[in-house]
Length: 355
Image (tube, rainbow, N blue to C red; front, top):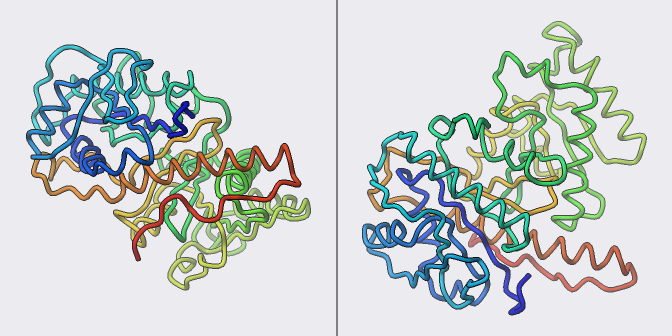
C-alpha cells in the first residue's frame, strides 16, 4: 500500500472494441471514488479521452509515463502504448487483441513489482488475443504462470462462492483432468482462500459430482466413486469440513448452497450457469490461490452492445471493491497470524452492495 494509505487499484483495459472502457469509466466517474483508492488504468491517455468523450462522461484523467508519477488525487492512465488506435465497436480484431495483451502484461508486471496493490481486469476476447507470444485460454492461466501460488477460479457475490476443479477445458477432456491430486489441491486452495481472503475461520465446502446423479453407483460413470469420494473422505478425516459429492442438478434449486461457505463444481458450466443465473451483473470472478489479488466482472466483452452507452457497470464496480476488501482482509489475516492475541479490527466488508 502507498504512503497515503490508499490502495492502488490497477486496471487492465481489456478489448478496446468491447464494453470494458465503458464500465471502467462509469465506475470511476464519481469523484468520491478517489477518497477510497487510487486507480491506474493501463492503456493510453489518448484512447481513454476518446472513450470519455464518446460516452459523455466527466472524468479527470491524468496521463503518466512512469508508475512513480502516480497522482493519488486523479484517475491515472499509464501510457502503455503511444500510437493512435482505431476503434470499431463490436468488432473482433487481432490488432485490438494485441493492445489488450499489452495492457494485461504491463499491469501484471506492475502487480508483481508492487507498483499497484490489486489488479482488476476488464473483459478480453479469448480468440483475438492468441499469438506466438500469448497462448492462454484466459486471464487465469496467464496469471497462474506469472504469479506465485496455484490459481483457482472463484466466482463470488454477497452470499455465494463457486469454485471450479477445471475451468476453460473442453468437455471431452474434463474427466481426464480430474485426478485425486487435482481435487485435493483445489479443495485445499479454496479452504485457505476462505480463511485468508474472507475471514472464515472454519469454512464449510460442498463439492458437486462429476457425473449426472454422481454416477448412480457406476451406472452413468465411476469417477465419483473411484476418484472423488476417497479424496473427500480423506480430507474430512483430516479435519477439513468438505462434504459431497452432491448431485449438481438439484443442489442449487433446493437452496442447499446456502448451507455452505463455498461450492466446488467439477467443470465450467456446472458451476457458472447456476452462479450467473443467481447473480448475473452483480457477481465477481476472483482468482484465488495466488500471492496477489486479481478480480474481474462476471461478464465478457458484450460486443453486441459495445459503444452504445448502455452497459451496466455494477459487476465491474463490485470487482473493484471486492479486490480492495480481499486485500484488506489479507493484511489483517497476516497481522493476526503474526500476533494471534491481537483483536480483529475488520468489522465489516469495505463495500456492501445495495439490497
